[in-house]
Length: 586
Ligand code: COA
Image (cartoon, rainbow, N blue to C red; front, side, top):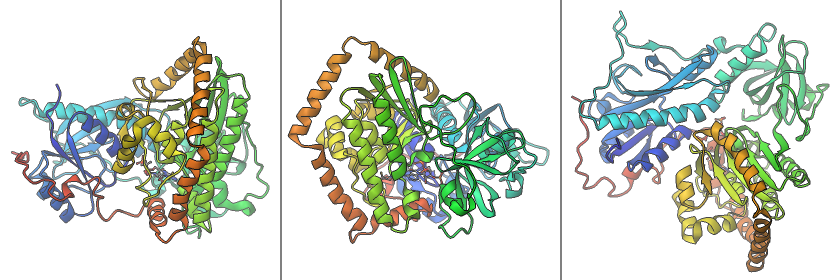
């Protein structure tokens, strides 16, 4: 059953990946979605009064919804745990305890946190991945299924949400508190690599495991298994691409990022090697791994190239999709090598969680002169983008397994075809980062796909697009697969079909002709120069908006108000004339 269109208010701590995914999915079903950040009870009450929603959904909330709101309006909490699970560390516990199955539950807000009546739930098998990765993929998919089912049930007059069974003490469900720092501690002398990985993955994204490495207090992020290297348990035994490898009693793990604690570097999350510094790492060998090297067991590398079935693949597992100057240059070098192979179709796979999120704002923030670092980073992104655009003797595919944002989207548009998994969310705009103008040849790449008006609307709206909407807008050429894993498998089959297609030479000829025409009409260098003229003002001009926005972003400064492009109910005259009454609890 398709739910009738409703006015829904999202009450959320931030417009994070899960809120964005639900936003695009529910809008696709015809619902009107307005967003309010959870700032304080009074602001929430004001938002509900202005919006007069049929329903409030809380996709990502760190505080309870005020009673004055849930008593008057139906409110749903999206809880990242199965029915009966309660508390603020649901996924952390699931990973720590190695759960085989997990789920998402849609609960009605009530006096007891996470203990309200259950409207719907959806399960998924757990994967050996970090909390952030599970949250962006499995949890987001299950949340969409559970919320959609709950909305259908809301239309059914006979449906009654189920109460959780009562415990002897009158409480309901199983409350589990936040995990304490001491409970997350790693005992490097005794813990196995599997145990260390679980611990690191359960704390990934936030808060990170607290530890001390080579005398420096830090939090650890983004861990990968290593099956060959060995050493004294706890010792840092190697570095690679900015990551450190630390031995356990039975194997080793790679840790790519650290956040210093009182380090004097602003405690930003940065590559581990950068945080520890050359002096501390003196004597630790750098063990590089060629992007083309074929590896037997588990290890970690950022950039991987391979060829199979006449197709060349390039994946770039950059943490959080952020691409520093140096990472862009290494990626460009790998691209140029891939172009030397006989592969006629080249597939840019991005990373497994993010395709790309553009320039590396954390690395920039850590530099002595962030304006110069921003400039260098965008130049490096531009060099990479240009190399892809100018690859005219190969068919280039960008295959998006995960989300992309800002310059990362336009990097993908440099390909001839852009394919995406169905749950992918794109943010093809820059303005949210302090009115950044943006580069990456977007002024060439976006209008040629979306038209001049379409490009203006997409850039101006500053809203996320789901894969189907991006397809409709012309940004994508194909959306397929039942989920990200299925998508990845089908990418190879499709790419091999392209290699085998009799019209491949014609397509390449047409591509060369089009590039020549485009270049004659307006040279690529011209687009770049014009974009960089604006960027110069963003980076070096009098208006500090970009620098302020970047600082707030990397330091996760809480929002003090919801921007008007999200809070429709706060636009002048927004809720006026709405006669639908809020659904009142009985
Ligand atoms: N540089 C550095 N870190 C970045 C990043 C970037 N360009 N984009 C995202 N990240 C990091 C975030 O800091 C966060 O770090 P965490 O591990 O401490 O949580 C993590 O990636 C996830 O980001 P978050 O904003 O929580 O993810 P999301 O899926 O909810 O939102 C975006 C995705 C793309 C909308 C959002 O991350 C964003 O606006 N990024 C900035 C894009 C940008 O302006 N790039 C520069 C211009 S090219």
